[in-house]
Length: 211
Image 1 (cartoon, rainbow, N blue to C red):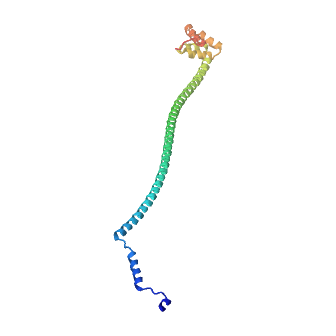
Image 2 (image 1 turned 30 degrees about the vertical axis):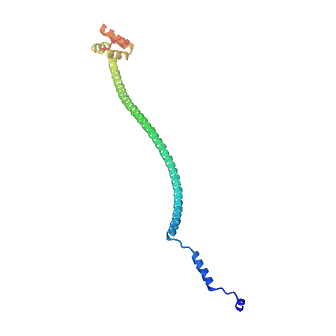
């Protein structure tokens, strides 16, 4: 009775039986099952990583495609711009070619006109020289005629008529007589042969021919 009052005493064999029973309830996991579980976890993680990489690469590929499409559009625009610039350059080259052809044609026309002007100037110079020589000759002839007129005026009409009859140039004799007074010319003609005097009279009237 004294021992019951102090406390309940648990027998040792009962506690030992409980420990034994606890050890019996814990089941051991086989190595194969553990390896399978580990492989399953690894496979799950690996699949997750692959999925993540796939989606990341997919987005990257989409971005790359977008960039490539953008670059293609810019490239096509640049090609079109280059084509337009090339066409514009070709048009300008054609305009320059036509302008060059027109300038060459105008240059040829100007050269021809210049040559024609040079020839015309040469002809004009030649004509001026000819006219100057003719004028000089006419002046000389006029001075010579004046001298002859003075000489014949100083002669007697009979002597002057005798000399004039021997001259073959009836026109010159007519010019000399026209430069004299009518009375002096008539006096000389009166001493000439009738046929010679008639020819000279024709020259004076302007109806005679040139011998």
